[in-house]
Length: 439
Image 1 (tube, rainbow, N blue to C red):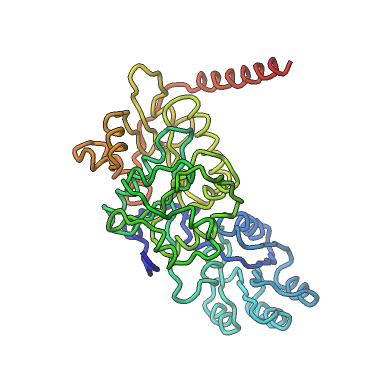
Image 2: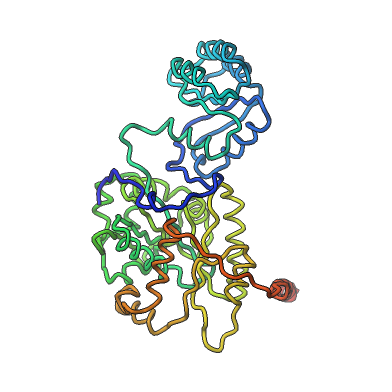
């Protein structure tokens, strides 16, 4: 695919989102940031910004005392890459203290000022003195992160691709199948380049599902990440459609795939810089690197089947993602294999109510269609163009990209207490059996 100076393919049709979920185009690079705040509110906002996933590479420390404390502090300490100062001073006092701060700043240090005066003259005077950005309090987390990211955006730098991470709440729920079909649908429907990366290196099925036998793929990218660039990435990609390429898993057991937490960081950086849409097919395992990729993705899609074990696992995943990603949209939930004959299951509405998350889609159980597609190396639309499930995949693609708003289903009147009571009993009985074995 090569390097692309691309626009967001979903920008024109994306509905407006609440400010707390406003997306940031780019994470902050590896810089040191020190902030000197004059009010508890701004200090709290900067503390929350420092813990956001987009600031994960930056080393951030928040002090109190405002611009006066900053100038005094750096008389005996080296300055970081970026100094953030909050001030409630008048224009003349602020400019005078900035001059004092400039005298102790090292070359290359940038300054972001958070003021309490909405004054164009002040803004112009700050820019004349070399201040990189001026924000007006009160500020929110995403505004601060966006400002810092913009300060360090290089001229002519490509935009970052949007990352969608698909993960199953339990093994065998069909997360990979859904990820592959949605990626294929996005590439065809939106006419924008999509890269599908199979991260289940030992048992991944991307190559099988697209009837490909690539000699290289994801394993070469991650094991050779120190030399990975856009040229090598092009060689590793396998093109399946005009706008769809895959990074396939080797699906061999000749080596183990024990990765460090940051093993995929450089691969993801290169991929995002070259492709506008990235779909990650994550394996059902819990390691430091899978956790990091989930938390770093722009959007997470959790697939589950409507039973109790999936409900428990999905709840754990959703709760973690909501807690660790407070400034992002909640994960999307897809229920798969709904309506298995003679098999008790939790109703779709009740499953969503338990997670406080309206399901994005419910895909019916159709073993003949899905089995035929898998055995023939086809997508569902290729195996059966008239199937209504194709419309479901199209809706999923539109919803997760923001081209369609999710229509919330009817509220369930069924109490979920028996489900959680049963779950509690199962957990207790499991502990008892373990203790009996130990005895």
